Every structure is written in structure tokens, then in C-alpha cells.
Length: 402
Image (cartoon, rainbow, N blue to C red; front, side):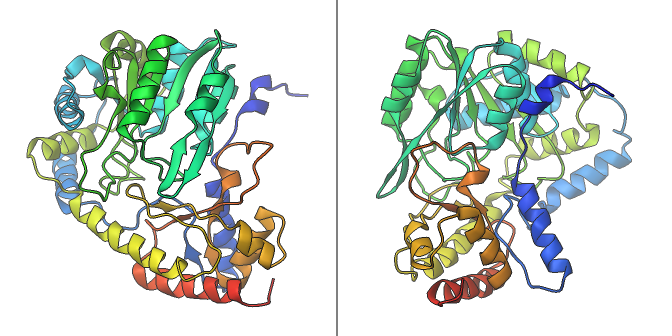
């Protein structure tokens, strides 16, 4: 019998893709589907990026390039990311990655030893938990408290969780799945904890530029001592509707980044050459080619909220970032006689065609959790479908059917 790596048992997955596959099966049987399940975007990648990509492809930028990324893009990102966070970066602070996700495992592989404890958000992006466990770390989930305006990190819970074995804090401001946004005070307290306990910090900034408020964005890097201990997960996927292009970056202290770069050459060799040149060109021309995407997302968000706020007993806040809604459906589940969140999800799909993920797809739930949440992504569905799908969902919620 063939023997496999025992650690494979600890490797998780991103179950939103399973929900998407399930919806496709239902659609292939002739049913209408309203895809609120994946954080994908159904917008065209900006024309300028597509034109520049074709240009550099035809200029034969098709071979290998430096494993850490081409200097032009690294310099452009150092300038762009630094200016937007009021931090100074240079070429050696940046390495290019095939997407945002590689930063997670390469960061952990660089700073985490077996048995080290890692604080991570829960609910949160499931790959955090997966990679911590797979690489032999100890996953320490921290929780959020629901407020009138959304969700705040439970700082007391973090403080109680920290031990001498705790080495890393993962922070996802402008958060998936809850769209939680940290206040300046919250980030200040987290920075104090990081310094007091000498923690490395992974700042997942995937949604940093998907914001609807006119307020200045906030980063943990803005506090003393944080630049030296923080790595940014950067991705082009959300800002420019490039989820399938697979290009991002790791940005942080040179002393750490140079070691993360060693994984690049051991793994993918390099990230796509001509796309890097295209994005360097776009970043350097100073135009915000993703601005129109954010404006369209605001309209989708507002339409979703208009519909969902008509449901009695649905508890939902208005997020100022990302493209997710995270309503509490506990009361409407009870009204319809549901006690199992997964059954509620599946029945919603089969009765209305509305496909969504639930809290259970974003990390292992705490044993004492009582409320039930679903996540609705409005990035991959147009306004006509949003209106039609949510009307069906609302009618089902208000009916006696289950």
C-alpha cells in the first residue's frame, strides 16, 4: 500500500469552491442560479491592463524572469503600497508572488517552527487555519464581537490566548467574510500586543483598496515598531478584477523577505513575466484603473441591503469595505424550523437558486457559538440577478415552505 505524508490529514481547503461546484451541478439540471458564493468578480479586467499585457507578450516577455519578480514591478509596488500606508519601502522589501495566497504559506514556513502558536481570525479565510495546521503550528483562533456597526476583534480573548509559545498574529483588516474594519484604537492595541509579546504579524491586505468610505484607510503599519515585524499580503486580484491572473506580492522587512524569496525559486521559479511588465507600467502611469469597479460594487451592496433589510428578524450591518455581507440568520432559521445551518443553505439553493456560503466555511466554529451567519458575495453577480435572486430568497423566507 502506498504511504502518504501524515500531515496531509491536517491540510484543509477553501470550501467556497465546493459550494460553487454544487451550484453548478444544480444549474446543469436546468435550474436558475444566483451566485453569491465566491469572492470572484464578473467585471472585465481594466482595458489598459489587458492592452499592456498583450503588448509585453508580443514584445516576447515570455521567458523566465527573476524569481523575486522584475525590478520594475517591485519598485512600483514599493512606492504605491508605501505611499498608501505612509510607510517607506524599497525594491528589497518586495517579492512578487503568483497570487495573494502564497504569501500565507511562505510567511509561515519562514517564521514558524513546529509547536509555535499562531493567532488568526475566526471566522476568517480558511487557508490560515489550513496552513498553520499543515506546517505543524498550533492554530489559536481569535473571535469577534458583533456591534451595531459590524464586528470588532475581541481583544480580551486575544490577551487571554497569548502564551510564551505564541509567535505570530494574522490580521485581516477589511476582512473576509465579515467585512470587519478595525478602528485606529483597535489597531493600536494590537500593535502594542505584538511588540509586548514579540510577535510577527501577517497583515492580509487583500481588500485594502475595496473601501466605500471616504475615510483614510488604516493599517497596523502606522504604529511604532510595526514595520520591522509585519509582512503585507498584497494581491491585484480584487482591485483590478484579476482573480484568475494569479499575481500578488509579499511586502515586508528585507531581513525576512529575502528568505521568503528562497521559496519562490524552490516552488514556482517565477511569476508570469509579461503580466509583471504590464502591471509595472500601469502602476507607474499614476491612474487608478480600479476605481470604476469599486463604484459598481457600491451600487450592488446598496441593492442587496435594500432587499435584505426588508426581511423581519434578519440582522445585518452596512459594511464599508470588501464585497461581502454577513447577516445573522438565527431568528429566520428558527421561524422556519431550521436548526442546522448547512441544511438551511442547501434548501435555500434548491428552493430559490440563491447560492451562498455560511459561517461554517470560514474556520472551525467555536463550541459556544450560538448565532448563525451566512456570507453573501455580491462581486460576481449583476444587479438584475441580485434583485431577482433576493426576491426569490425573501419570498421563500416569508413562506411556510422549508
